[in-house]
Image (cartoon, rainbow, N blue to C red; front, side):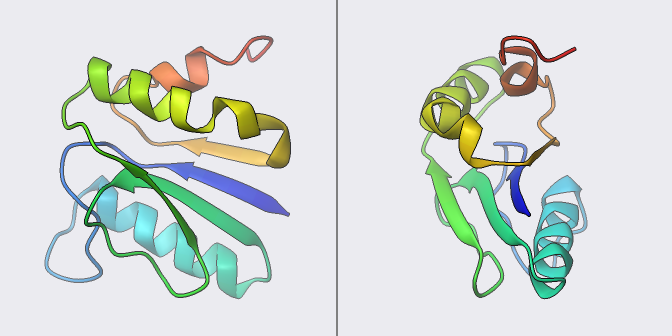
Length: 101
């Protein structure tokens, strides 16, 4: 299965030393990948992701502005993914997908 995880764009993802939603994104990516899935994760530049996981970098910090950048970064690839896990704060990327309830 091809999974896209959309992390909040507030702080970079780190493997250790931070326990917020970004850490949850790291852990989800790690376990989904180890279960044999192809995982991509949208996160702030400078983020650490598990080995074998694709990092889709976002350069802006914040909420609405960053989330618009996130969505424009991967919207052309939506059909590449079977599952999108949107853990962003405002969920703007997921709400922007046409036909998604």
